[in-house]
Length: 155
Image (cartoon, rainbow, N blue to C red):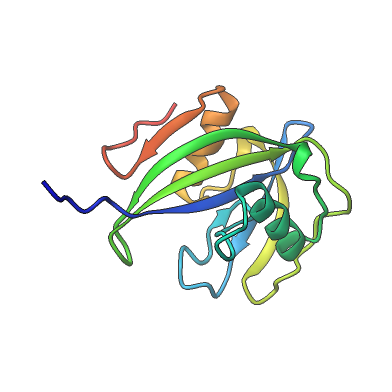
């Protein structure tokens, strides 16, 4: 039997957190979830880039901070079904930086119009739902979740 295997797109997310606060960026002019808060994130670049290399690259490109890959900890994995704008399956890898160099700032003003620290208990209402789910999983030390396959009931 010759079945086609599903294609899964990996996406990496960066969690910077300190003093019960988390850094969120508001998407702007990207064509996906614009006007909503998310985490610095991105996709692999080329065939040879690793997940930790992608996170450190995105951190520098999006918020101007330098992170040593050895200072990253994989804290959550999410299998996500995205139906709009296309029917895709994604694997979201959420990495927390234990430390970083530099002060976070908007580096891509054409894709982000706000970058702020938020209390974990006071995330903006317009945070992307699956990002909010991942943050709650992080807080409850839940290493894996799924989104888009069944209804999510929250914590």
